[in-house]
Length: 182
Image 1 (cartoon, rainbow, N blue to C red):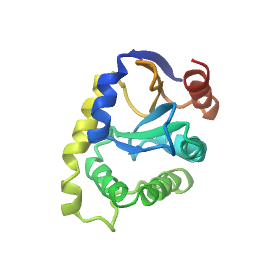
Image 2: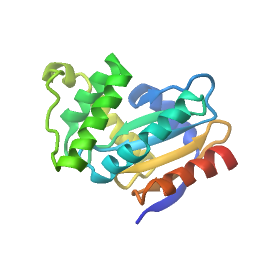
Image 3: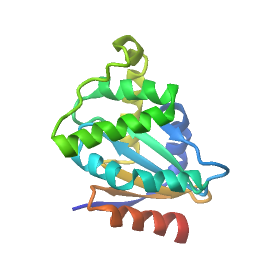
């Protein structure tokens, strides 16, 4: 089951995104963005990642969308989020592969990753404030939980958010409607 709503004045949200959220910029000038409000222990986020991350990356590489990752750890895994943020800042590709590994382990083995050994607690401490600021960003646009996907176009000041994950069709339809047809 999912909920869908329009967010007016996404400009305020986007002005804060660059400071706190993790953004994979498109090749060229993107037409729009897809923001993923995610939790590393969220089963719906895991399914979304496994089902759709390759599709989102293709849209990103074609210059159509920026992908924005907004930490929203509702399962109290702030330090784990801080550690993956460190990986993103070192190498976004390593972040994406770690995200895929975390979510694949959850789906295929039923295991929750509790730590990322290659990032120290000291390195992660520097990212905890950004994780908390991302939670505030989520509340700014009234995100009820994870996963939530927001799609928007840069030439408009609105976005459409979808809470929950009903499978790839619902997200692909959202992107089609907002980015390509809106």
